[in-house]
Amino acid sequence: MSGETVKLLGHWASPFALRVIWALKLKEIEYEYVGEDLPNKSPLLLEYNPVHKKIPVLVHGGKPIAESLVILEYLDEAWKHNPILPDDPYERAQARFWARFVDEKCMPSIMSAFTKKGEEKEKAAKEARENFKILESGLGKKQFFGGESVGFVDIAAGWIGLWTRMVEEIADVNIIDTAMMPLLESWFQRVLQVPILKECLPPQDKVLERFKGFHKFLTGGSS
Amino acid sequence: MAEVKLFRSWSSSFALRIVWALKLKGVPYDTIFEDLSSKSSLLLQYNPIHKKVPVLVHNGKSIVESLVILEYIEETWKQNPLLPEDPHDRATARFWAQFGDDKVFPPVLDVLRNEGKEQEEGIVKAKESLKYLEEELKGKKFFGGEKIGFADIALGWLAHHENVFEEVTGITLIAEDEFPLLSEWRKTFPDAPVIKENWPPRDKLVTKFQAIREQALVQKLKMAEK
Image: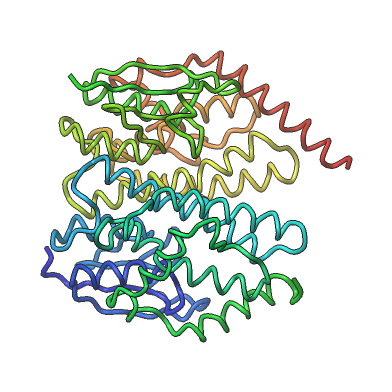
């Protein structure tokens, strides 16, 4: 099965596609990358992900898998080399919990802080800070969420410090509070020093420009 | 023998997933029923972040979030697997379980808690999502194929709680002519062993969700008056 071709439909600026790229690289899986020109969705994307019509989509031996965290689990099950989830069921549950927490709590609050104005923006930023504080409790004193080396949560969330800094700059809001989350902040930097992760990052200036465009569009320009 | 405890409420469809999984695998466990309007200190200790049910406690360690708990149960007790063997089929099951929570449950809840335009929007969104589930059931008895699987357990609330919502709102989302396969599944799934013995009492659910609907509508009126 692992001999069949692997294709990834992604977008250069998408952190969700980045998760999958990181996992593919860490597991040394060869793949063909197909960059989508969003919002012009290709017929291929619509065929492979008719339900959500979103990237990333992994196509393995012609069969598609959608939703980035589902794809990560798939990669670990189809390729046993360099596992990204730990062996122990309880540790695996912890990893899944924190990855979900990032998607269900951290991301929406950061997005809110990015798109809202005035008091609502400050309220969202406070929530985002609190969510990061909670996320930090999952890291503790470890080097990475995966322990000594990068794991599931690091792959799922490793980009979030960088993205949040951009949100802070563009929306003029404070989310990463060093005093409040020292361990998480040092992880934000440490995780992106891992060579495989660092070299896959999209050009940050281009991402920033793109975010600025979104911000203008979503807020009418002012903060 | 290892100690397994499940914190649940009598009505929670999310906690019901865990009841089904444990019973389908024949795992003995103790139940602690929570009154969610007055959460026990034990619940808050075991789930300090979300403060919700279900919580599974195994060997003193707590696991929360129902789909995470299901995976934990699957990996810890290997008998009667809920997920298929093939990685692609496993990904498909996970996809539909998540789809239910992300795209079906929210609009269905909107239909319950709203009226007028917002309710109409909820109906449209819910039916759009239900169409995908209908498609997925083609050629299958259950979402898991010949037998109940991970996705059936995750979507199981559609066969009971959603039915209650339909009675409370007077709005049928899953009509037989529109969703023949889903309608059939809604008859077959609740009748399966283990599933059928564990439904929360329907009349109590009707009362509960009637109250929830009334309260939600009152809240909306208050907001509109501000």
